Length: 260
Image 1 (cartoon, rainbow, N blue to C red):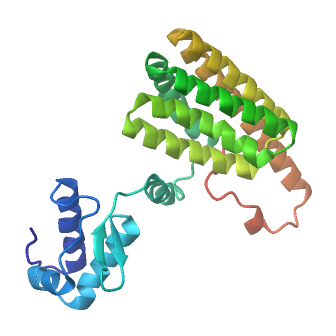
Image 2 (image 1 turned 120 degrees about the horizontal axis):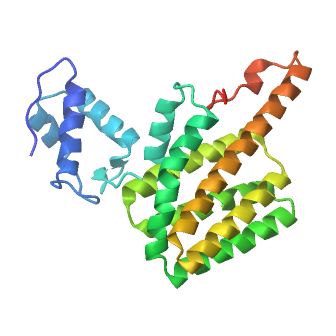
């Protein structure tokens, strides 16, 4: 399955070969890699180099290294959280803005909502209805964290209805950036109430299976969120300006430049 490697970046070649074996189906989740001694012989590398490559694959989420008599390196399915975090780490240095985020949402979510409208089941509608009720409860009882979590879950549920893992992953990633943005800007109860009203409108359009209306309501919702978060950001900057002596490192925004 594997070839010996000769390069200044030996560990990377080992990583590439094992990863390719996973991609093309020769290795599947649950499979155990050959014993360490056998891999060292196959790759013609030192124990240290092999272990470096296996640790890298573990960090990437492709392997789980278990200790003990029944231990070894096992192939696992990369979970969404690990993949999302890797993508986020890349974007941390890209000077993102709220407008960037909204632009992607406008390209993605109305289409997802349209697709979901054609495939939605009564069970899906019940899940959305339950979530709306939970959001109402969270807002009524000033549970800001729960309210924000429900706001994002509403969109995740709609994406899951499409059954498209690529759309689901991208949407999950974008919505998590939105979670981070809300955690930084801390929009108030009025913001959550507006989001809830928008979700109710989207839900009703889904209930009617009205594709055009679902599209329009999703666009309206995304634009409202962008406008309100930009206003929250402006207010935040005004507050920061009042306290010039505040340590700016503590006040920095880790993901978005919020340049508008």
